Length: 287
Image (cartoon, rainbow, N blue to C red; front, side, top):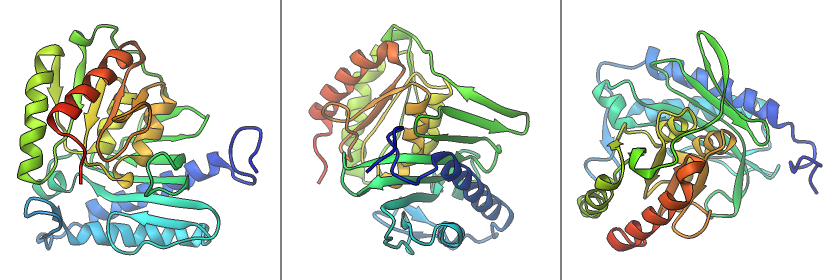
């Protein structure tokens, strides 16, 4: 059973948004203030896919803080330490989205915290209720809850995000990202070569969560990427949707690991069709 607002019974999405913001800020302080000289880097899927001790410490803090206030909820995170819950809600978290940037001292990475209903490991079977994406270096905090709009909070205050964007794809600034495996990057490069002459330009900042929030803030007009996990995009997608962006996947409106795309409404139909076509041609379904 749900409420008239479409939320599960007894769920206060605004309160969950507030919790996501507080937890993201706490983790953001940790990864900045406690960053050691030697990050203790190891690798995951490939040698170019790093993980640091701060990724794990950030997730441990997030899990602890969420458990103190929401002990019955589950947690799915990029690093070790997730848990199942009994409430029907799952927190989907990325303790450092953009670890390569963090490793190199580039101020474009994020802590991403979202809470979802459904099964977050199955595309189309989950929906975000609330979320927050923090850039710890700039202090920008993007946040939203379902049906409540999207906001950006900085030291100067909070403003509502509402996307506008161009109506001509040729004038669109497009964000993207690339996988870690060389074979994947070669296919993504082929897609990029085909897309680039049709748009204003391409940007790659190294954090899917920040890309989606940049779409919401009008810093990008469109965005696409493959090989994203739920923790990469759960909070950012909610912020983008609540700001009025149109999001989709390889087929229709369901983002999957094969493709996530988003765009301002005026170009969403043509952009979505184009990246679906180019993704199928150059990248194809992922294993």
